Length: 468
Image 1 (cartoon, rainbow, N blue to C red):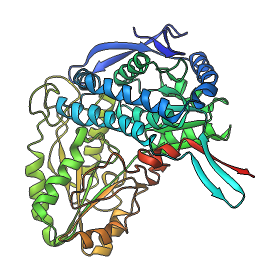
Image 2 (image 1 turned 180 degrees about the horizontal axis):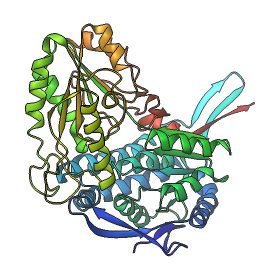
Image 3 (image 1 turned 120 degrees about the vertical axis):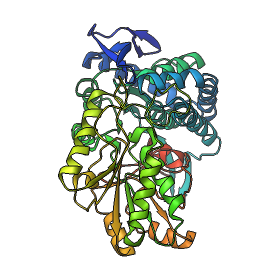
Image 4 (image 1 turned 180 degrees about the vertical axis):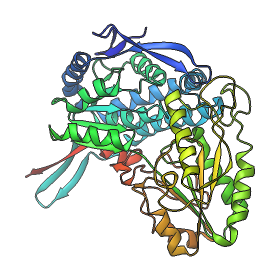
């Protein structure tokens, strides 16, 4: 069994108990991590609190050097880390390398670069000097769907700001976080600056969120769990950043290139087997093109054949666990019960073993149906008709979420006009690429705060006015 990383050393958990890490493609146990305890959290927070004065006093250039070294080492080990993610999370190897490993390595490097230009002294206002200072000890609680990226989106800006970190990675897919801890240790990050306590959310996560010596908690996960984290954090009035669920709309206006927009939309719905908070799970198409869009979507979905994450050409890996597969199947059944038409897909396992599900496309989906309103977190696409641009915007904005979205039109100007009307944290216009330097976060129930880039750094900074 692995150990916890506390105060610069690998140590056993006080519980002596472990959690099996299961390969979702084979259902085999591949590793075991400690089931941490509140006592383990206490030790990790104490280490982070003790390390904070000296770490916060380091120069930006010193912190940048360590982050750059870590990013370099992560890139060198990208193949091994990607294989780890393909094993414990089930992402196809190509996706695990490009999106799950190299992208977060780039994010880590970007914070080293940002420290070279960021002004922590923000100038003067009248007789006041304005300075930005690290918030303190940060508790980071991360999910299983992007098990390295979400860790780096919290740890990199926190460390760059001069904060110390106590991380609880998901117990479902924790191994990439362990690889990052090993890298931080090897590059010489001082003891106590980064700590890792594995375990269950209701035990370790809640202990972190409620701890009086944790100055800020940053959480990524479900909206339900985010509410719980915020409630616990409120008892000690700590800062909270939440990146939560989504039900993002892909709005295809009548004059758009339908085939291109549908193809990109299916890819945006099925990436990471649909286990993506910003997945484009709702495709909105004008009534005049609706039947064509459904036909195109079904044909494209058929090419997303589930398979072994390590097999060349696999586009759709397993869902991460039996519980997640059961959840997706319940939604597929519920969609049919509510009157939507399942055009492609089903509930049978297409493989002999593993937590696989066939990609699904629903037609005849109406606003208010569960599959239109609720986050499913699987390869399930709902195609929804609209009659006017105003109706499309109303449908797009008509869920509790507001994390991402997309708009397609014949011109950028027309698409941008609709994009500005969407109540969501990000919008891709005519296939605009994801930008890991741009702020990422949501409106409404999709969360509070932003990650990545300058905005991500500033989540971990306090602002002080010094009167002269």
